Image (cartoon, rainbow, N blue to C red; front, side, top):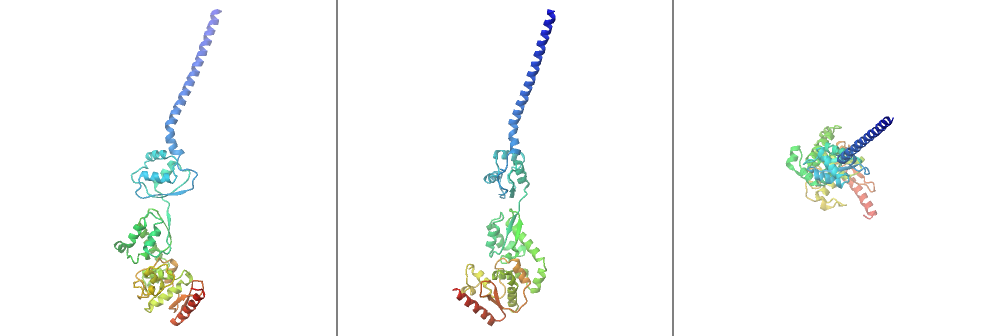
Amino acid sequence: MKQSHLTLQTTFINASMSSNTKKNTKRNVLLGLVAVAAIALFFGWKPLKAIYFSGVPGNIDPTFVQIPTGSNFEQVVSILRQNGLISDEAGFRWLAGQMHYKRDSMRAGRFEIQPGWSNRDLITHLRAGKQAPVKVVLTNERLPEEIAGKVARFIEADSLSLLRVLQDANYLASLGYTPETVVTAIIPNTYEMYWTTDARTFLKRMIKEHDAFWDKNDRRAKARQLGLTEAQVYTLASIVERETNHNPEKPTIAGVYLNRLRIDMKLQADPTCVFATRDFVTRRVTEYHTSFNSPYNTYVYKGLPPGPISMAGIPSLDAVLNPDKHNYLYFCAKPDDSGTHAFAETFQGHLVNANRFQQWLRTKGL
C-alpha cells in the first residue's frame, strides 16, 4: 500500500511539473512574439508612417503650388515646406527616394494639392506632372509691354522674355508678323494654358486662336469685301475700340471710318494721336496731339496707321466686318453723360453737334 501511494504521489508531481513547463513555454513564446512584434514595429513604423500616416495636413483648403522650371529636389521640398504642405519632412524625403521622385531636375508646373493626402499621394501626383491649367485673361491692353506685363501675371514666362518675343523682328517675320502688327495676332479673350508656358509657346497659341477666330462667321471673306487685310481690319477695330465702350454704336463708328477711307479722307481719329504721343492720361485732345509727327497720327497722315493702337475686342472687330451702311463722315460726343455720339454727313452738321457739346461742357463748368 505504501508503495502504491508513493507512486501516485510521484505521478502527480511529474504531471504538475509538466504542466508548469508547458505554461512557461507558452509564456516564453508569447513574450518572444511580443518582442519580435515590438522590434518589427520599431523598425517598420518609420516607413509605415512616411507612406500612410503623414503628408499634407488635413486642416488646409485645396491649394495650388508652383514648381518653377529647372527646380531641384531641395527647392521642391523648400516650396512644399513654405506652403505648409508636408507635415513630416524626413518621411517625405525618405519616401521620395524610395519612389524615385528625387531627381536633379524636377517636374515643373502648377499643381493642385488636396488636404489630407498622404506623402505617397502627394509624391505620386507631383511625379505624374499633371498640371492644373491657368486662365489667362486678355482684355484691351494698348502696348506690347502692357500685354507682356499682363500675361506674365498668369504664366511662368516673365514680362521681359515675353516682350523680347513680341519685338523680335526676325522671329516675328518667320510667323508672318512684324513688331508693328504682332498685336493683331492677339484676340482678347480668356484662354486656358499651362503655367509653364514660355514666351514663344504663348505667341504661337495666340496665333492659333487668331486663325480659329478668322475661320468663323465668314470673317476672311468679309475682310476681302472691304478691301482690307486681316491686320488692317484689326487696326481699324483698335481705333473703334478706343472711340467708344458702347457696343451698339461701334458698327456706326466703323462705318464712318470706312467711308473716310473710301474717299481718301484723313481718318482724324483722336485715339491715334493720343497713342502717337503716349499721352494716355490726357482728358482733352489738343493741337499738340493732333500735330504730333508720327505715322500713327491720322491727323497728320492719310490711311490706317502701321498697326493697331491697342488690342481690339471681338465686338469691335465684328463691327468693322459688319459696319452700318450710311453716309456719315463725322461724329462727336453727345451733350449728355451717355458716352454715345452724334453723327453727321456734312462738316456743317458736325459743327452744329460740336457746338452743342461745347455748350453742354460749359454749363458743367468744364
